[in-house]
Each structure stands twice: as C-alpha cells, then as structure tokens.
Length: 68
Image (cartoon, rainbow, N blue to C red; front, side, top):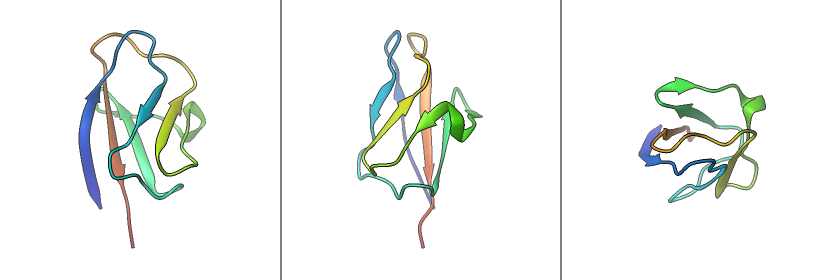
C-alpha cells in the first residue's frame, strides 16, 4: 500500500494525474480526507482519475493505492 501526496485542486477541477500511476480497481480516492464512492470517479487507465463533479478551490484530493 502507498499513499500518494495529496493534490490541491483548482476550482471545478475534475481530472487529476497520479504520479507513479496506480492499478485500476486497487485504490481509494479521498476528498478532504473523506473516501468517495467509486461511482463518483473514473479510475481505469492507471494514470488519471476523473471526478464526476468538479471540486472547490483548495480541496485536497488524496489517493491510497494498493498493490500485490
């Protein structure tokens, strides 16, 4: 398991590039420390996460990636 450095969002941001990538289906995404349901984002290509709705300026997106 590895926790990636949080990303501070800009107003309305929906796309986030994940440094070092991730394994699709093996991650948790948080906004301001709260885990969001998988239906609130798309994380299938191993490189980016796309949120269904944009976030507010200064919101913190976090990712916990699980591995073998």
